Image (cartoon, rainbow, N blue to C red):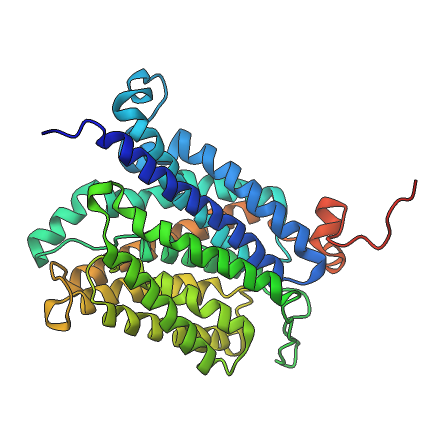
Length: 401
C-alpha cells in the first residue's frame, strides 16, 4: 500500500534538520565571540546574523536557481505540491549556503569593514558557492557523469566536507590574503604577538552548539526519511570523539585547540559519513584533530597568515582531507561500503578548491579595489564594536533613573 503521509513526514524530517543547522549559526557566532578580543565581540554577533539574512536573499533569488535550475518566483505549484517539500528543501540547503560567510567571518575578524563584507556575502552565496554546489550535488556540466564513466564513481560528498567546508575555508583564505594581518600581530623583526581568546566559556559554548547541530547537518543530508542512516550518526560521533582527543593531546591541553578538535573531526567526516566504517570514522576524526592543531600553528606562526579562528586549516584543509579520506576509508577493503573512487575524490576536491579560491579572490579583490575592505588603523585600534556599532559588549557604565 502506498504511504500517502510520507511527504508530510519528509517535510518534518527535513524541517528539523534545517532548524538544527540554522541553530549552528549561533555556534559560529559564539565561537567567534569567544575567540576575538573583547572590543570586537559585538561585531561578531551582528555580522553572523546579518550574513545569514543576506545569504537567504542571495540564495533565494539567485543561488538556488544557479545550483538546481528551479525557483519559487511566480511558481504557485511549488507552494503546495508534496506538502511544500520543495520549500523546506530550499530552507535546509539555504542554511548550508549561509555557513559559507559564517566560516569566512571567523577568518577576517577584527579588521574587516562591515558593509563590504555583506556585499561579498551576497556575491559568494549568490554565485560562487552554488556554482560548485550544482556540480557536486546536482550533476551540472556533466562532470559527475564523466567521473563515473572514466573512474567508475562520482565525486562523493554526502554532507559537504568540500561543498560547504573546504569551499568556505578556501574563500576565507583568499579574503585573509587580501586583508592582511591584524595591526600589531606580526612585528617587523618577525616576532609573533599573541592575541589569546577573550572568553573561553563563550568559545566552548559555540563549539558545543555546533557539535549538536552537526548531527542535523550530517544525518538530515539524507533529505528523505526513508534514506535516514544510523551509520551517519554513529560515524559523526566517532569522528567528533577522535578529533577531540587528538587535538587535546597534540594541543597539550590548550582549551582553544580542545574545542576546535571535535569540529575538525566533524568537518572531515561529512563527505564519507554514509559509507565508512565507524572505526574508519574514528581514524578520520583523529587525523583531522591532529591536522588542525599542527596546521593552525604552522599557518599562524611560520607562514604568518592571520586567520583569526583558523578557518582555513579547520574547514579548508580538514574539509579537503575528509573528501580524500572518504575515497580511502570508504573502500570495501577498509571496511567501507564501496562505490567510491579515490581519483574521483581528488579531482572533485581540486575543482571545489579552485572555484572557491578563485571566486573568493576575485570577489574580495574587486571590493578592495572599489570600496576597500579593511578598517583604518585607528578604527581597528578602537575596535569594530565602537567603530561600526557604537557600543561595546560590556558598557563601562549604565544609565541611572
